[in-house]
Length: 151
Image (tube, rainbow, N blue to C red; front, side, top):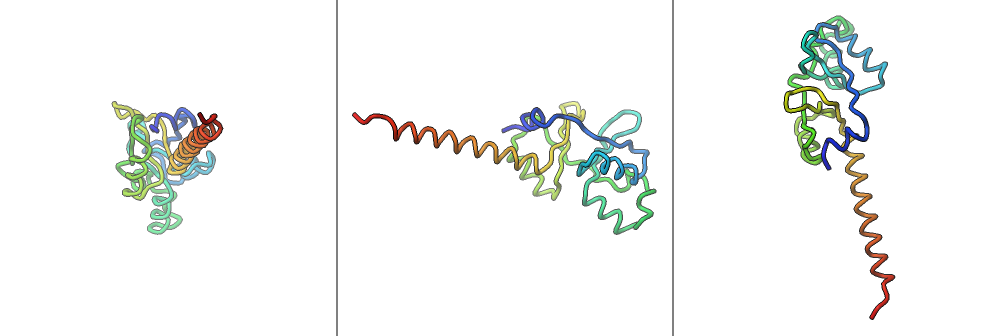
């Protein structure tokens, strides 16, 4: 299954924060939208610059304490952002996320445009759905074979 299937099912809404905003603004946007990551983009061009998720939040709070909220988001973000392509296979993206120790990846186009964000949860859910479908097909095939009249 491809990443494009996941985005088609979940939608491609992507929450962003401008690079000139503070870390507190990024966290407030994440909390408001009830999301686990937010994409950091250039304020003028909209270009992908980085990603903020749980590890970056913990590192910021651990390093700077409460004052981290007033720091610029570019100093706290993960850079480069983990990325994948619409045509990437789910398993290869899961493998890369495991290697990179990240839970979110920004889906980008060939021109590095931001097309969406996928989480490890999205990938696991899609893989489970695919496994259930395969199991149902095999079960149906076995049933039809068992019910076929013997000659």
